[in-house]
Image 1 (cartoon, rainbow, N blue to C red):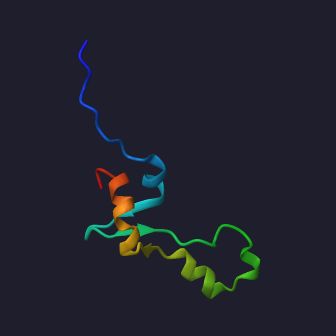
Image 2 (image 1 turned 30 degrees about the horizontal axis):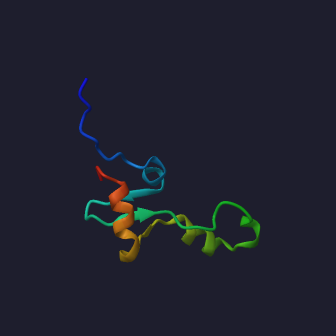
Image 3 (image 1 turned 90 degrees about the horizontal axis):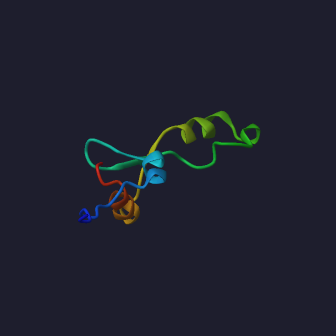
Length: 69
């Protein structure tokens, strides 16, 4: 039986944390909203709810793990 061609797989942990936008940028959620919300004001929690674009320095690492994005 011949072996198949090896292929890269999508890292599932990365695919759950990051999404690629239509323009090719990578969207992710902000840190710091999961717990201890009582000590944060409303404005801070509202800003933490909005997604952010990943910096260019981390872009290559994420995109190589998201093969079909």
